[in-house]
Image (cartoon, rainbow, N blue to C red; front, side, top):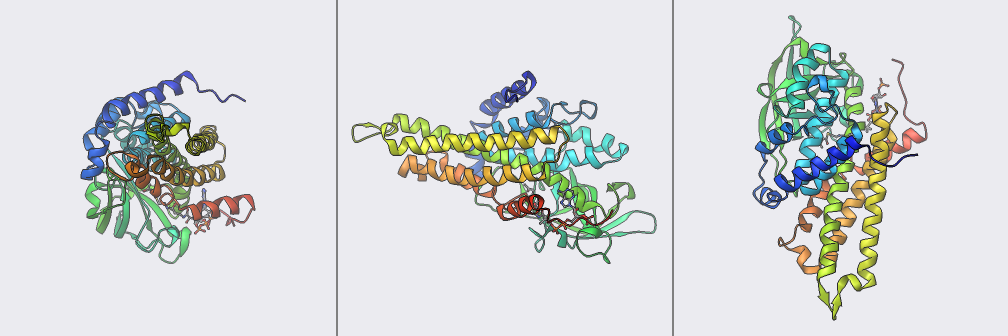
Length: 386
Ligand code: CAA
């Protein structure tokens, strides 16, 4: 068993760390305060190869593996979790499904601009009445006589939606089939959707979250991704990998909080000594460091399994469940270490706390992760005959 990183993985981790220190750290607080999506940053990330880390080289990516990708996500999220989710959704929820399920023509057309960061990708599954119960979605795709599709409906809380050039959108192509079986996936351009509303959020303010409307979008027949009626499978397989990325994001946020809390504890003096000399604070920092390491190991195991082509449904859900709950707990503890200062905007830990909360919600709530883990382990998921 080898827990070491390869030279290539270290190189990408180092590149992401340096990029984050130079290009993200100095601006993260302002982007949060101003709720600003830093569009120019993603071009720069593309130029250094970080918008398509695990995309094959022949499709414009860096050709590295999923482990290198999650290591980079941790670094980016340590600096700004909004940047982390933008890259995560762009890569694992929008680009990789085209690599995995697209036709040769779709791969050649859509993947290279995404992998180079010239276009941003989005994943449009959620609707106002279809959140955890994703298979109840109602956006309708009707096939036209000429083989094209007409899509009507509305999608909610679409990460990257205000900046995306390519959307993977899920719609019901067979109204006779309720649930998962009647859903298909489509590749849409920005021109197919109308951004209806920018969502105001508790945190993650540097990321774009919008509602989009489809008013009879005319979508060519060659935009169907994978087979008709098999879109839910695309969504679920995509989320299996995406959840590992969100877990890496949570580790990055918690690490940022740990770094601020430990530095503060070594500086701040009360009762005549550094607060780091009190056992109460030492135990908090020891627990933080231990839980961050445990979460990272779960992330790396799931990412490694995905990279090897092994099943990772359970491992990805476990990584996300543990890492997200850990990040919420430990960012709160970081505020506690800083006391009153932690509650102010003078230090970034209050931002980490706000940013951490969403990792327990998107790409499947903690309750859904527990459901996925339990039904896989107990063999409760029914599989219909193909
Ligand atoms: N891989 C491949 N196929 C899968 C699968 C997987 N991991 N899990 C299920 N499927 C297939 C099943 O085999 C089944 O197909 P058949 O009928 O052909 O057998 C089909 O999908 C339906 O499966 P289920 O019956 O299990 O579906 P369900 O309705 O019970 O739902 C669920 C399961 C796990 C609750 C699912 O709805 C779910 O994951 N919900 C959470 C939704 C979610 O995570 N949303 C995230 C939105 S995107 C986002 O958040 C991005 C962002 O902004 C950061």
